[in-house]
Every structure is written in structure tokens, then in C-alpha cells.
Length: 314
Image 1 (tube, rainbow, N blue to C red):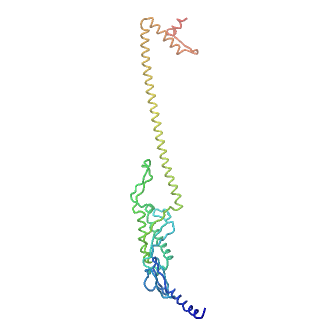
Image 2: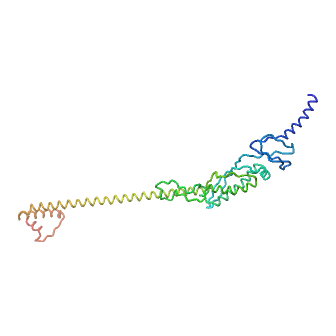
Image 3: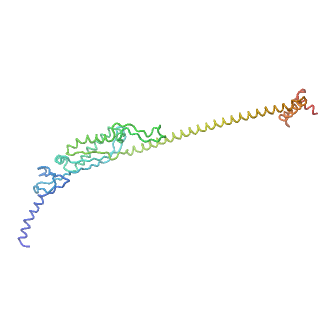
């Protein structure tokens, strides 16, 4: 390599360095702020293509044009009815005023930190102003499907809401939008990603749910016992009615039989004096048979029928 080649290289190298520092490329998804000694100069460049700047003195600062995501940390916060819940939120945003954004925040890392402060604070304020049911539910006047057996039980009934979760999200959006606009940021929307009870409260909620189910089970058991007692009572009543009707029929039959027997006896023993005496004798024997046994002691008068009969036997 001769001296001319060295001289050419020495001449071209600075030119290449200056050219490299003078040219920069703008992508479709970004906008450029050129700074000189840390201060913005010129207009904001948002048109894609190859651009020029003063080498070594001016610096290219790239700012996103696309919609960006903020995903907040899950934080514990109290509701208006003093219930601690864990709230996880996310939001979509974009840079509306690149110059204001650059002057106040410089980069996306600082922007995410500012979003965390403002959106987290407004979320906490909104949650503290509303009861838990307003934050969880979205639909007003919704009627849950309830089993017919639980229609008159105090379960499955939804308390009415005045605003709902979507309106709470709008409140957070309205409160945070004005504050973020000061930093050149446009807040597109903010949503609750997940809402859950705090761990210390969750166990109490589970215990209350168990207690409610046990009350329902006890109610069903009580109603079952009442129905069983009613059935048993009806059974006993029906049994007594059947026994009473059977006894009445027995007495009726026995009365008819006794009347028929008396009629037969009357026809048989009432034909003559001898037949009547025979009847008296037979009835007396039956009476003796029913009242006298081996251990019976009788005290009789001399004019009693039994004495006359015994005396006649002798």
C-alpha cells in the first residue's frame, strides 16, 4: 500500500464518521426530537425516512408513536365499607405532545413511574369512595338465577347498585387524564384487571359463606323434620281412626250377635215353665263356672239361688 492509499484512507475516514453522525433514520412507529446541548431544536420529526442533523453537536431522541401499555402492581386498599381488597389495574396510553413529554419526563421509564403514581393514587381514591359491591358489579337491576327451593331464603339475592364498576373506571380516567396531560400523555382507558379480597379478609368471607350454607342446610333439615312429624302425626291419627271404626264395627257385630242369641234363647226357653226353669238352671251353671274356682270361698244366704241349687244337688 503506497502513500497515496494511506492519504486517501485518512481523508475518507473523517468524511465517513461525519456522514454517519449527520444521518439518521426515522421509523414509522416513532417521532424524533433533536436536541443541541440538551435543549430541543427545530420541529418534531414524525415523517419516516432518512434525515440530517449537525454531527457531534445534535442528538436524536426517539419517542414512541404507538399505543403503550401500563400494567400496575396489585395493591391492597380499603373500600368505603371498610373491606380490604387487592386491586390490579392496567391502562393504555400514548404520547400526545412529544415536546412536553420530553421536557417533563425524557423517557418511557420516567413516564411509567409517573403513571404508577397518578393512576395508583386515583384508583385508591376511587375505591375508598365506593362500597365493594359497586366496584365488583357492572349491571344494574340484574336478577340472579335462584333455585326454587331457595326462593324464600336470604341467599342469592343481589343488593342494588347505583353506579357499578364501569362508572368507577370512568371516574379514575377523568381524574387522571387532566394530570397526565401536563406531561404530554393522553390516557386512552384504564381497567380493573383483577379484584380480590385481601388474604386476611378472605378467610372471614369463606367462613361466612360456610355459615350461610350451614344455615340453609339446617333450615332444610328442620323443614324435613317438620314434614316427618306431620306425616307421623297423620299416620297415628289415621291408625286411631281405623282402630276406632274397627272397634265400632266389632261392637256392632257383637251387639247384633247378642241380640240374635237372646232371640234364639227366648224362642227356645220361653215355650213353657219347664223350659224357663231349664234356662235359669243353665245360666246359673255358666255363672258358677265364671266366678268359682278351686280357691273361691262363697258366703251364701239360705234364700239365694246358688244356695238353693247347691242344696238341691245334695
